[in-house]
Image 1 (cartoon, rainbow, N blue to C red):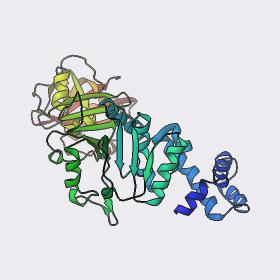
Image 2: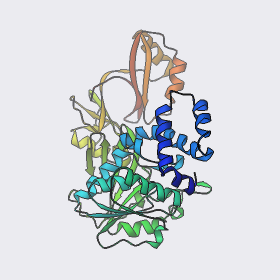
Image 3: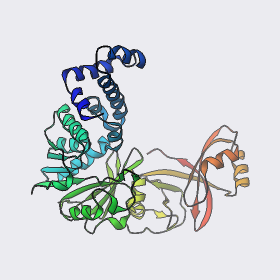
Image 4: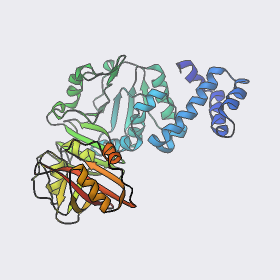
Length: 389
């Protein structure tokens, strides 16, 4: 979609067309609807309206009810921050006393919208004319104030009261880039911003060594999916600042610490699988300390306790019994237990669970969960009972 077509979507004709497509989709076939609308409207405008309706449907899972009023492109929707994650970040930033934010590379405005809703005065900068226009339209569609400049982020400086927000581009014309200095902006520029009042969204796989001293790194999961890391600049007034933080949505529960390793102990009656945000943040030891547990192995993300304890940043299991680890003996034990449906969870062992399940060919009537891992550097199989959170 080019800028001229998007601008036509903003006219009375365009908005009416988008509304009609939404109303008739599912009532008429796509072919019949498109054929009828093209008799009265420009072909490109009809195609754009149909595309917007489709993208709004896709965006609902990521952005909720707002998606029904917003505008998108395919690529920009894929890159947009989940609404729940953007809201978490914006509300935390507002809690620092920040009053204004400058989003350098705002795309279609998903983070800009959350920042505005959190009460901040917002400016967005986007060099792509179509995305800049969409960001403006999305602010207006949701009745939010804000300014969007179509410019290169390198040419726009923050005012004294603006916190800089950055989401460095990790793709170029040839695909994904892996060199931090090949990002846009380069990581050296990002690090300069992080020395002051800045917030940076990046991939959850960011190496810990790239996080500058004095910056908090927060890993966020949403519904069990590890979705991003957020870096909080050294100049921000965070009352609860920690070197590392793991946060799990939708509940917003978090765990903070310095990444100290946990104690290793004997296997107890319960196992706890940390949320991926905890694992990536290097806070498994901190979780073990929080629930008065120990690690089963210093290199493996399982925590064990002697009592039944639950934590929102971990999935808990009761250890029922140890089973033979070797495949032939494991199958015999599972057959004796009448297992037919098997879930395998593995860490620290060279096993492909799906392949092992197929080879076992279990035909019983019982559902079971088996953990394959290492305890005292020995591979073990544990029959476990998943516990409700």
